[in-house]
Image 1 (cartoon, rainbow, N blue to C red):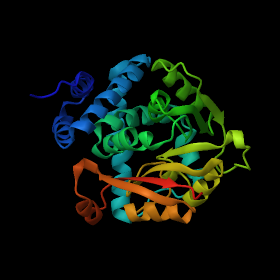
Image 2: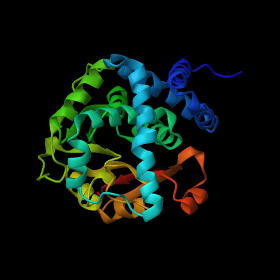
Image 3: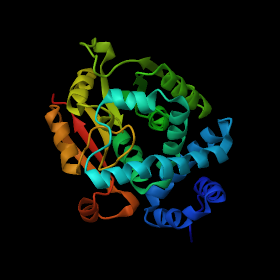
Length: 311
């Protein structure tokens, strides 16, 4: 008997109502998921629906923004990448001028990415790894830090985890911090959450009280010019033996992606170059393709790495 997953069904129906041509993609994406991934996707769909319904544009605008992401943001960048073998932009200054300082564009971009956590095969699997494998690994009463929490979904799961003692987020942008705070409030998080305007490249020597047991960097490294320096700087706030969780896409063009990770092995090596030990890693190709096919065709792959700071 097929298990009922109402939020996943509702999000699928809302998407098809606005974009019926996406039906075959949605069906294929859902068929290739294990029961565990489907369960997590249903929970994430509940979150996405709540956040979309709290937005003035509602669910219809959110779906339209997801379609905008697929057709008008990712597709042109994909065509450039295929023709040239590199991302279109290469500096943070370029991405900042073209993307981050464009408020209306960023709003649509972030809304689209919100839906991708449910719909895209690689994103849904990376989320499942975080929820079912990474968070349970943390020690009791763990102090956690997320860099660039954005839509707040990863932070939400940390905030409800029974073994998490404190939750902190860093972001450069006051507007992004406000968006994360609003999202957590919408999702009913009432426990204290510290959201701090902080540049991850500007970390001094934290006091013992400011050290953490876990740092999450999900889809951050592709946005910076030197991901190794970013991890080294952030890891100053990590206690010896603490964990760094990295989720970085390989061969994944987007208008604000400036550092090209070209394989899961490359992602692992970047973590090692930052002075951290790779404890575990996984990779999930777009559309459920095999990693061999993804390597041959340069398909986007979500590379997940659990690393540990030497004791």
